[in-house]
Image (cartoon, rainbow, N blue to C red; front, top):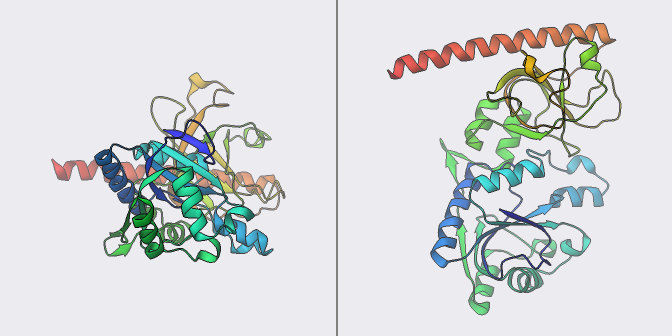
Length: 331
């Protein structure tokens, strides 16, 4: 999959089948849309293309109004969004910077300058609530009329439901905020996860007796916050059970930066003391144990981490027992 920042690049395909959206989380509704896009692209002999935005348009408008609290909590980092788009078979992704110029671009100019001249769209697939252009004046009806005049097909995909619930990024966020990881996984079609390179931190966890892997979450707000039982992929040839904190570490730091700190319950001896640094890992958040809290000193923090590790071990023991029972039932 090729990724481009903006559309003024010689490597971009001269024509494409296109869909447009934020795709935060790349949930099952997105996946259904991308499957249809892939089919239509192959039928037309075109590469499939996704146009997405960074920052999220709501982030931009919240900052512009001086009301950061109005920005949506993020489900996924850009890295994870791109990874999931690639898994869905997308050939090309255009990441457009959402700024003052793009926000003020009239809908008809967006069609002619971006879709037609910039990307050579021959087929455009949008969701049922799609709006675009300055003041969101563009809609499906306008896009369809423009397609008939300018030579591209337009299709609209209605909402996707799972067990009667409309799948949306908002629904995934609500599940994550509530700590309902099972519902989040059902909406996403996979366990919720965060990936990134392991970075050096203060090494405080090592001093407290709990070696941690630190991953950045490169957004101001995450939909998931708290302490979780997790499973880490990428350190060894098998996933490792652990406990993790996703938050701002109020006991030891006041910077407000989001960090995912993972403590593997059984650290592989062959990795050595520093064997995790620099590795690209993926951490599945399987069960929320509790909210993040501030403690009166490192002794209280250490006791809390020890209890979290015990709770995670209990979760995985129960989880393994249920998996064995399910296997026996199938047999």
